[in-house]
Image 1 (cartoon, rainbow, N blue to C red):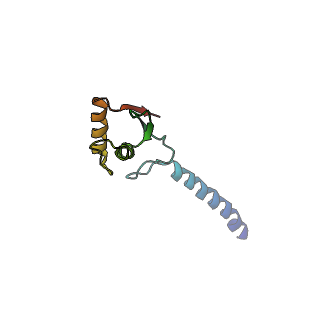
Image 2 (image 1 turned 45 degrees about the horizontal axis):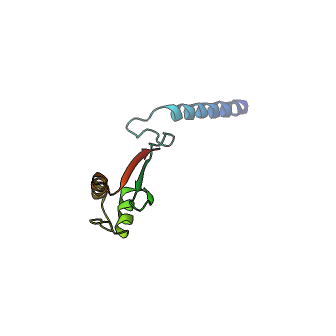
Image 3 (image 1 turned 90 degrees about the horizontal axis):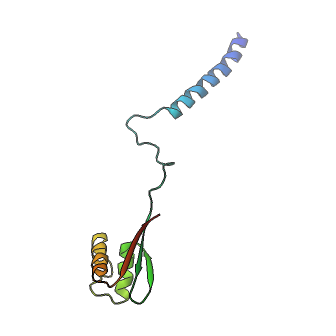
Length: 104
């Protein structure tokens, strides 16, 4: 009888390991897919060249805040994203800045 229990333990362990392997690869219903290994979307890099020749890169809000410190008219110190894009586009349209948007 003892031999039966000794032989049963490895069989149960192998069975548990197989079940674990199957559960790892089985899709889970109603759960989010695995996002850890998904490739990252390209980053938007904004580059602005001012009339003085300064090159500024970064987020639109940061660029507008820096331009406000340089004395650009109508530039709030803390713009929201939509306002920042609007200001950058209007300054580009009248030729005050050169605006480039890149995806990396």
